[in-house]
Image (cartoon, rainbow, N blue to C red; front, side, top):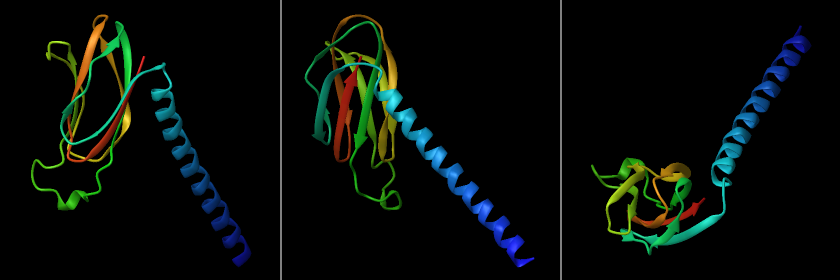
Length: 136
């Protein structure tokens, strides 16, 4: 009887580990697919608030891979502290699309539609170090 219970427990544990591994792999693959849609067009790194130099985009989809490297734990944040926002602007500084807007740590990608060929820039609001790669 003990052998049977041990065997069943072992099978359930193995299945649980396998299922979690598959979920992690799927999430990783999703991120890789989101960031491997095109060729890097521009890459930026900075700390805090900044407007990037302009870069060329074509009409169509563009993927923005971003990471906020901020070490402050969420439970230590004051209200409104920790905003991370990435806004795509045209050359005149007009908002085209809010690409990312969160009050949390961020490591991911978002694809948006670029309305027309032209020069664009990013307006970054960040409480700490960040990096962004634009692919198209």
